[in-house]
Figure 1 (tube, rainbow, N blue to C red):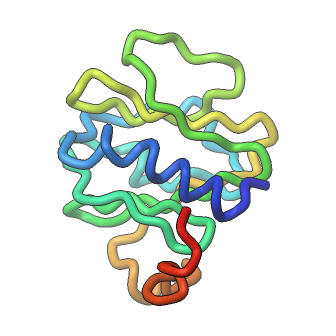
Figure 2 (cartoon, rainbow, N blue to C red):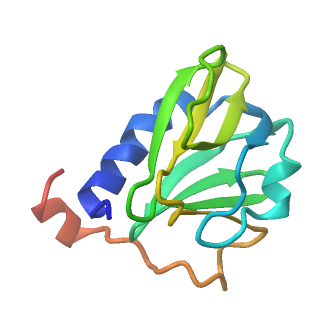
Length: 140
């Protein structure tokens, strides 16, 4: 399972490619992950990404209409790829972006999750995030 530093590294890797770009649409090839991919993700279109955050081992994509909650599970990974690159066997979810790139989720074991919530407050994503003085003592 990716540990917290790997999840933070993933966040930092995808953030510059997503924030300010718009999700044109999502492609869900296999929605049978640890929990079924939320129906709202199938219908995503024309949603700008406002921020990419991390809370514990969850990645949070903030959109004007809600939040995408991503957990990588045991073997999941996120990659930023050119839109024209064809998917491979274990590539389950793509977010096609306005900048010509794709956020591609790969998970051979399918233990990860792609969830949706309108409001992050009240959702059972662990929190609050590890910030402040403790974080300053341990630099990534």
